Amino acid sequence: MEEKVFSYIEQYRMIEAGDRVIAGVSGGADSVCLLFLLWEYQKKVPFSVQAVHVNHQLRGSEAKRDEEYVVRLCRELSVPCRVYSYDVERIAAERHMTVEEAGRAVRQQAFGDACKKTGAKSTALAHHRDDLAETVLHNLARGSGAAGLAGIHPVRRMGDGVYIRPLLCVGRCGIEKWLTKRGIAWMEDSTNRELSYTRNKIRQKVLPQLEEINPRAAQHIARAAQTFLSVEEYLGQQADMLYSRYAGEKEGGIILSKEISGEHPVMQAYVVKRVLAYLAGGEKDITSVHVEEALELLGHRTGRQKSLAHGITVQQSYGNLLFYKNAEREIPEKELEFHVFSRENQQIPEKKYTKWFDYDKIKGNLTVRKRQPGDYLTVTPAGGRKKLKDYLIDCKIPRQERENLTLLADGSHIVWVVGYRISEYYKITEQTKTVIEVQVKGEMEDE
Image 1 (cartoon, rainbow, N blue to C red):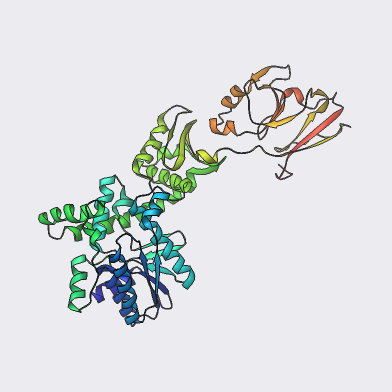
Image 2 (cartoon, rainbow, N blue to C red):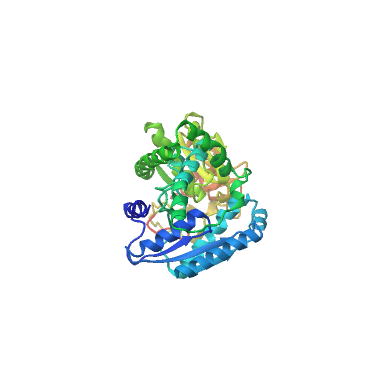
C-alpha cells in the first residue's frame, strides 16, 4: 500500500519538499488511512501536515464521537488538528441547497480557512478508487461528457486552493485491510448506509451488481477514467486555442464567431462550454444539454434565443452566437462632454469618439439616452429619413447590443449613434456659424 500510494503522489507531483499540506480527516477508514500514510511519507520527503476535521452536526453523539477520535488520534501522532463545526441542516435551508451540497460547501470553506491560516499549499482528500468509479457512474447517469467521465482528478485547482487525492490508486477493501493489519481503528458513519443519498445507492446497489459481472469492475472503471482524464486534458488545450480564435468579449457578454461551425462538433461543444463556464464563474450545473441547446442556434435565424443555466442567455446574432448573463446586460449610457464654440473655418476632426455638430440646427435640449419608439435618423443630405430600428438592423447590430447603445438625441431625431454614425442633418456645412463638440468621456482623444 505505502509504495503504491507514494509512487502515485510522485507521479502527479502532489507533495514536494518544504510543502505545507492540510489533510481532511473525518475519522472514517479512508481519511484515517490517508493521515497515517502522509505521516509515514514525511519520513521520505520533508513536509508538514496538519489535520482538519469538520463536524456537520448531523449525527448527534456520533458526530461528537468522531470529532473526539480524530483529535485524540492526531495528538498521538503529534499532528496539529483544527476542528470546524457547522449546522449543515440550517445552512442547507438558508441557501436552498441539499444537505449534501451544504456539507460540501462548508468543508471547502473550512479547508480554505485552514490553508489561509497555516500557509498550506494544498488540501489532501481521501477519495479512493471506488469513489472514482462511483463518481464516473453518477456523472454518466446525469449525462456528462468526457470531463464527467474523467471522474475525480488526482490534482485539481478550485478557486485559490489545490486539492490532491493520494488514495485514488487504491480501493476501499485494500484500505480497510491495511488498517486492520496494523491494528488501526476507524469510525463508521451510519449515514453511509442510508439510501436517500445518491452515492450510497450507487455504492450499495449499482457497483455490487457490476462486480457480479466482473469482480474488478471498479478497478476497470477507474482505469477508464484515467484515460478520459488524459483525453480531457488534451481536448481542453485544443479548446483554449479555439476559444482565443473564435470568442471575444462584446458589450457585457461573449460573442462566438459563426466560423466555429467549421470545427469538429466535439470541439464546438468544448468551446461553448468554455464560454458558459466563463460567464457562470465555473462549470457547476453546466451540462451537455446546455451546450447542445446553444449550438442548435447556429443554424437558426437572427434574434432567436434560449435561456441556459446560471441566468445565461444565448442569442443567434447574424450567424454568430451572443452569450450574456441577464442581470449584467443593463449597460449605462456613456458619459458625454460638450463644448460650444465659433466655427471660424476650423478643420473638422475625423474621430470615432469626438464629433462636431451644427449647434444652430438643434431645436430643443440635447439628451443622452437609450433608444425609444419613434427614433429616427437623417441618412441623406437631401433630408431622407430612416427609422433608427431599421438602421441598426441594416448595420447587423445584435438586438441586445441595440438596447444598450448610447444615443445623443434632439427629441426623436437622433443626432449621433455613439460609436456609429451621425445624422446628416446636423453635419457641419459652410453655413455653420456655431459648433458643438461632443466627446465620449474616458475615451482616447485620438479616436
